[in-house]
Image (cartoon, rainbow, N blue to C red; front, side, top):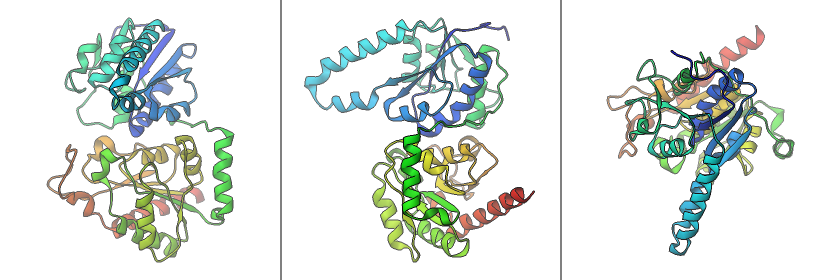
Length: 364
């Protein structure tokens, strides 16, 4: 491939969301920084995921696309002119940055428009068939991944071929402010949770992906076995509109688990995850963060294809059932047999195998 740039000075990364996909893009961005150590690298991301991008060292500027703010304002017609004015100002500031290169890792019409309007001389994205909503029309350099079905991490690494970078996986290291670390350490200390190995269970998903949730009674039965048979301290983490889920799970339990303190930001959630020796969750952002950190991770999968969406690292295992209709790309499902077919015994067995593997590695 002909080299496009010897040394781009100003680079924009576009990945607006979601949490798991942002984590999957991070190894590519680390490669970008390694290839161009003196370049200015900015990341365009939606407001609700700003904190996660801020955790990654090597980003010079986090540019916030205020989707949540504008969506809330759309309820009030009297604010329409204000939104239009703010959007024009936002796009003007974006164009004024004078980017040499914009890389669109997101691959839909919204990210495509923002990539096009960034006014970068080179706009890199995925080719037709590897992006959504005709995203390819907004870029002037399209990259075709080696195959259709591949892990998202590998797919995102291939986008760097447009800059003649032969990228390899780099594990992100998160930078967490001391105030967030101390907040979590205070919670751990007050609850006396550091006297045993900590297992964190995250049973929730976004509302958009709630059909991927494992039943609360299954989480309760699993947590009881972790407490009774393996001697873990079990903490249930939760996000927006998920507290009632963990309350329901705890109400089903025979033994005492702990509901996590409120984590006001993703930085505090990461600080809490860093105390864990085991993580269990569904196909959701915190699962990918836990795996990325290096925690032994068990991911409970239902409809999504693990070849594409599984946690990337070898410290993670996926528990799922092979049934005729799974994997699928449906956004809703009336029965979700795939996720309901996974039993607490299935997940507990996976935990035991993973624990045995890591106990052996620690001895070795």
